[in-house]
Amino acid sequence: MTKTYAVIGDPIDHSLSPALHNASFAFRGLDCIYIAYRIPKGELDDGIAALKKIGIAGFNVTIPHKVDMMRLLDEADQECKTVGATNTVVNIDGYLKGYNTDVEGFLDPIRKRKIDCTGADVLIVGAGGAARAIVAGFAKEKVHKITIANRTPQNAEHLASFAKQLGVDSDHVDIAKAGDTASRYKFIVNATSVGLKGIGLPISTKNITKDSIVYDIVYMPVDTPLILEAKEKNATIIYGWEMLIAQAMKSFEIWTGVQAPYEAMKLTLLGRF
Ligand code: ATR
Image 1 (tube, protein in one colour):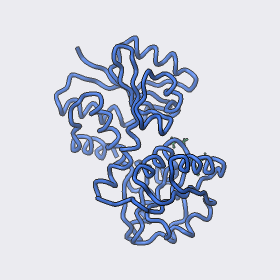
Image 2 (tube, protein in one colour):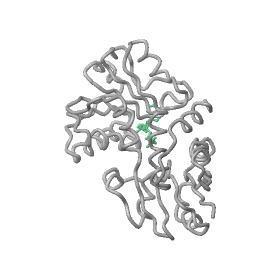
Image 3 (spheres, helix red, strand yellow):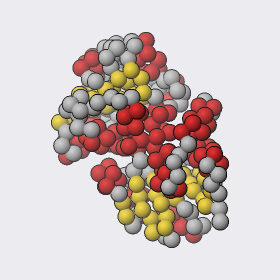
């Protein structure tokens, strides 16, 4: 019987996950389909009941449900427990097991470049759900210190305490001044939505250098204003689409037990931009 997968969230109509997974199912000859299912905030319980009813094989979870979904899981893997959020769920006859592929998905492009994070000083701009998974990723890689810059300082402070709980030295700085000290950091990560649709810079780029590694999790457009300016400085660039594909590949492999087709995902994704 055909297995059905889904992504749940709101908004969901522009999600690239259905295209990525359907291309990959077809490429691997698997009898599976993947749909987008809009579940508004506050309607998660009913939405999950509906998914169970149709015998969903598994699903991805995105904004605004990544944290709330935790309470509806029967089991959660270590990464979920650390981050306090899930993005990938497997349904075994109504028993829901959660995973978080954002952490390893974030680290994957760094690992591919054989960049060593040990002892690094890191600047993360943003303090939302994505930034939390990134902090967990850097903590796993034993960085020296994580500095957070965020529009709302309280959220930055809160994320810095989370980093400390994971055993990493952490502080927060004023987002308006974060660019001034950018040359101090090995990594500069944009974990805000600024740059989406090619509009806006999360921080001033004047002190980004050729030794900086600039990682932008915004993937639409591929070349965000931050990426374009970092390229001008000859910095090392890591694209948001790389993380998007890496987390999707990990979800695909959890569900199917089959290696995800990187090239099929990349062609599908970049063909859409
Ligand atoms: P996600 O799960 O993608 O991280 P989120 O939890 O809503 O989404 O977090 C969005 C992040 O982008 C937050 O750090 C947010 O800053 P605030 O904590 O001040 O809300 C940041 N962000 C969103 N729009 C922004 C803007 N226009 N300027 C600066 N930061 C912005």
